[in-house]
Amino acid sequence: MKWIRTSKKNRLKAVSYLGICTIVIGTIAIFKVTAQSHNQNQEMMSTENKMTELLKEETPTVLVEVWSDYLCPWCYIGEANLENAIADLGINATVVYKSFQSNPTLQGAFTVTEIAKQSGFSLEEARKKSKYIEDMASSANVELHMDSVIMVNTMDAHRLAYMAKQKGHGKEMAKRLFEASYVETKNIADPNVLTALGEEFGISKEETFAMLKSDQYRAEIKSEIQEGINNGLRGVPYFVINKKYSLSGAQPKEVFKKTFTDILQKDGSYTPLISKSPSGYTCDENGCEIPNKQ
Image (cartoon, rainbow, N blue to C red):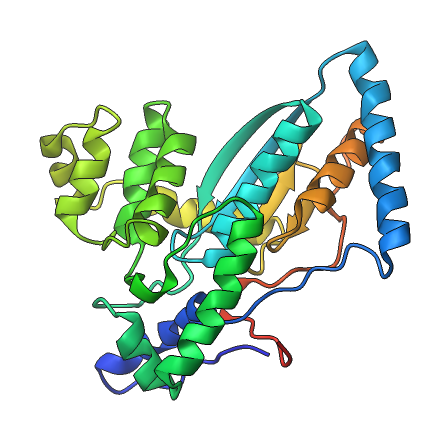
């Protein structure tokens, strides 16, 4: 089901984002690549064999465009699985990060305690759900501290990432913003936080402050979001491979590996976007999917 925004009358318009935070502090996505472990093992062996044959001839190259939001936990986990799959396969991959806002109207900053209270969850229940998602992240070698996450509007974070991308540091800045959000639990809407992150990649405080005080890159962020929607995006994370194939949701590493192997085996002339698997859990402009059963 979706967590639907309901408040339009007061500051708790931001409660729309509380639905997203519900997923941040709770819910575990249980991925099933196949119905039985025996079939799963067979598929994994088949994928490895196919890639071994491909690597005999040359090192394959893929282009992966990733739409994500820095306060979407599925994005952080899904992108970690993507990177792990690329490393396992030993292929060359150009990964380009693009923008999406799960809640473009959010104002203010919210702690998990506030979120749990306003969403009707007890802190005990929130912490239990938080543990589930942290365990999932751990399986992807990702560290998350859900109890301390600060939920904010991510437009300025995306603008900083876009600036870094123009300077050749887009991928690195995207990863750094996820770490700032989920590991260091910083407020990534705070100009001081953003300027400090920019400095790590050679962007001066003056340059970042000037950008934040202006409308610079807002149009570009909106254009990237619209591009994703035009390419079939309905929620993030969303992956477009070689501008031909798409994957939606925080897919497991093995799904990425099989997808890359299949594409590299038969990719030829341009093919319209083809979904390679059922959708995983996603965050969209209405919130985040919450499974009926844990």
